[in-house]
Length: 137
Image 1: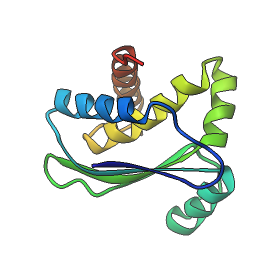
Image 2: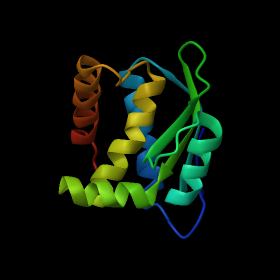
Image 3: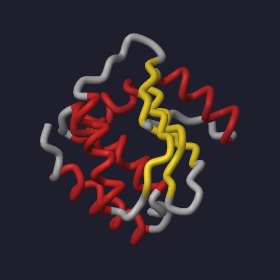
């Protein structure tokens, strides 16, 4: 099951298509869907989570809590729509493209991909680009 929660005024278009897309990505990665919760919030909300849970006093676009067991992918993915909007402008991409990149980034972490080392970052970006290119919406 994939659920969407909105803290604040943000709304998400194409929710059904996003659910289908995430299912496709998980199938491609050989994973099963457990429960994914996307929580969309503003910078202040996510900053507070970052301070309380990770002890990081910085703004971020995404924080994910991974509850995956074996091949069953589950977790909570918090996304700051304000941070995504700013990053999209800085990267000269659309808000929708950057939002979808961040959304699938969290899923890829649950599939076992990391982005701490440069080689891992390259692989993660390649996977993001691949799955973004396969969107039909």
